[in-house]
Image 1 (cartoon, rainbow, N blue to C red):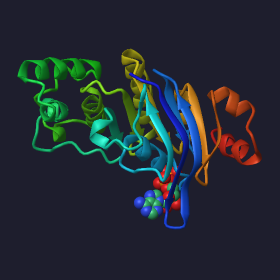
Image 2: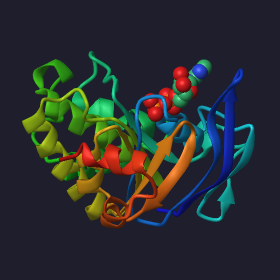
Image 3: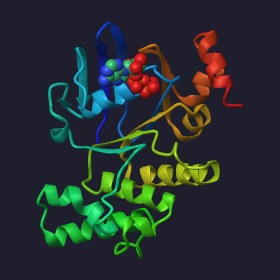
Length: 238
Ligand code: ADP
């Protein structure tokens, strides 16, 4: 587990500044939401923290380590994206264990960690199934188990629930929060859903046109928006 600190990150695609001098701290063990309209830079910021994208300038610290030049596989991060794909021909257990096999942790340790991860996401009886034998919500639990089974320092989630219908989505929000609290992993969650961000997080950062326009605890941001845009945007949650 670790604190994440993003300082003065700028990233352009051609003449478009997708991130413009973005700074935000994500204290150890908290649940954080990046919120903002489509195109505001949320995914770019998450991918920059992950290491899929390298910023033009600025720094990213995870724990005591500056990682802005570190490749994605060396950042020790767990990830789950909207279009997460499970391997269809592998069992649930083998899907979850994939990252452990890549890291060559050994068969006994692999089995133990997969068992723990299955229990954590409440799929203890489903390890031998194939993904097509699971419901949509169960498949997402498998994707979550796969993201955390390697004990990463940070969990990054890009709209992981947006494909689910409303009822299932609310269930999964609580489930995600429960799991995050249980293992205490620093989590950064991208959403365009104001209600989701306000409900789930310890702190939200609001992006607009690549700028971090406000960051703070949800109630504080909701009650004291910095400008009319933020007020109107958060107001849409009701
Ligand atoms: P959000 O996640 O808030 O919807 P993004 O971070 O995906 O926003 O995108 C921010 C801006 O950067 C958008 O205008 C988008 O079109 C642009 N962008 C993102 N990725 C690329 C890319 N690989 N090449 C060119 N433009 C990009």
